[in-house]
Image 1 (spheres, one colour):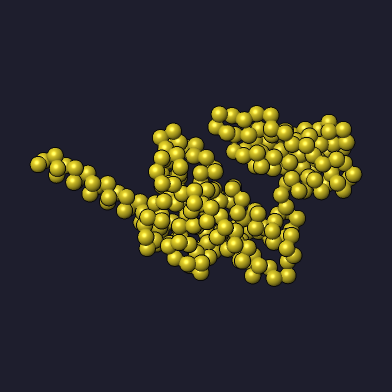
Image 2 (cartoon, rainbow, N blue to C red; image 1 turned 135 degrees about the vertical axis):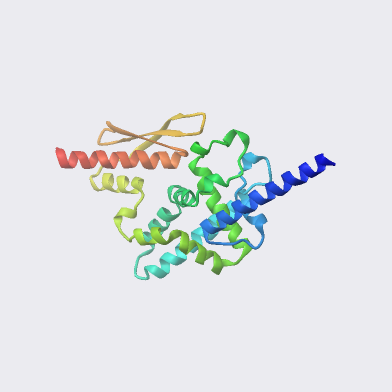
Length: 243
C-alpha cells in the first residue's frame, strides 16, 4: 500500500513540475495553448523515439514563410520582390530561428534522445526546427490571425533591424555579383571534410586562376558555403583597402 502511495506521489510531483515548465514556456513565447499536446509534440525531436515534431515542422515552415512575407509586404509596399525575398530569407534562416529559440531558452524544454542530451551543445538545427514546429503547433491550436500576431511579438526586434538594402543579400550572391562585375569566373565550393557530428567544412576558390581560397564551417553544406563566401568578401575588402 505504501508503494502505491509513493508511486502516486511521484506521478503528482512529475505532473506538477511539467505543468510549471509549460506555464514558464508559454510565458516566454507569449501564447497559451488550448491543447497542450500540440506544445509537447512541437518540442519532441525524432531522436526521442516518440511521435515527433517533423510534420509540425513541415507545416510551421510554410506558415512562418507566409507570415513573414505578409508582414514585409505590408511594411514595404514600394519595395521590389527581389528585396522582399532577400529580407524574408534573412528572417527565416536557421541562425535567426535559433536566436529566437535561445531567447525562449527552448533548449531547456526539448524532448531529445539520450545521445542528444547535451544542454551545452544542442545543435542549431534542433532549435530552428523546433521553432518551426512550434509555429505549426500554434497554428493548429488557434488560427492564422493569432499565429501572425504571436510571430509579430517574436520578430519585433528583427523587423526593426532589417531594411531593404544590399546588406540583406546572401554572401554567396554578393560574392558572385562582385566576381561577375569584374569579369571573373563564379566561385567554386567544395566540401573537404564532414565530422561525425555532421558538421561540414567547405572550401571556396575564386580569382582569375582560382588561386584564392577561403573556408567555412556549418551544420549543413549551405551554411558552410555562406561562411566561406563571407570570408572571401572580407578578403576582397582587405585587398581593396590595402593594395
